[in-house]
Length: 448
Image (cartoon, rainbow, N blue to C red; front, side, top):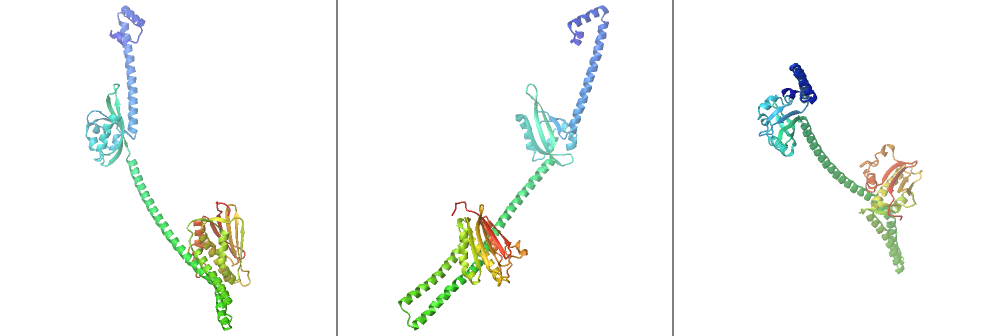
């Protein structure tokens, strides 16, 4: 039976032939065959064992050269470690035998704050079969290292847990980088908050400064308007003076009668109404526009020119106003008038102070026209122009070329046109003087 067991892979015919040979030779050939088969089987087993040892050596080398430490635990009470790869010495400084022989070593080397988390992960693997956790473990050199512990529960064919297989990976550098990133992120957030606060403070400061400049600009414009009123009132005051003087002479000659009194009242009332109208124009001129409205910028310019008519006449300055096409824009009409007034006052002053003004023509040309979807207003004078070194700084706050100038008029002009009305303003020189050009979007509310 033992012989039949050793040759179980032979066919029935082969066994019958072996039995016949054995009977004829007294069993000698059969014993020789069995010995040969035994030697072959021994060689095959040795080959398999060498191959298995080679594969095992390669696998152990692969595990030891890996950054991750492979370990296994008994799923029983206390989860004792039963295997640890050799590279654990590189990671923690402990030899594998010490972790295996001392069941308490792993727990005792855990950071006190992480022990509950680490034990919980081992319990969790029973319900989830797989778990990943992080904790700190003290190495042989006395330094805590962050480990990522990946655990998986292994079952047999009957689905009974037989092994807890896991890996330890050193993530100390990763955690350090994450903590550094969080720190830098917190610093960046703090910087952003500080930056936002500073920006807000700067916005408030700029708004406050802008309000101060607006106030100063209005005061300066009021001063200029007082000069305009003085020019406007000069003629009617002279007329009133003559009328009043004539009353005394008429009385002495006995000419004061009902008709004379009615003429006196009519002429005096006309002059007073004119002066009162000038005050009303002055008051309306400085009343801030509460919201954007559609207005005809050419008509707004005409109203400013009316205010300056007496002053222009006194200085013998010819002003020409030309209008072409639709010049209705959306914005703040009173503030726009202040811009025009400032530019015209600068032109008047430049013309009157120009050293060749006595022989040079004194004129201001204003043109309002369409250019596609824009309304363009150009104001040119014969005042000699703006020195090239001042051109780039012309619209800067507190920058002035006048000995007694405030340097806020043109800055506020740019603030109103560009900042409040979304347009553009710039200055150039012509052959005879300066030219200011204002561009504003045409109103979309239809033709006016």
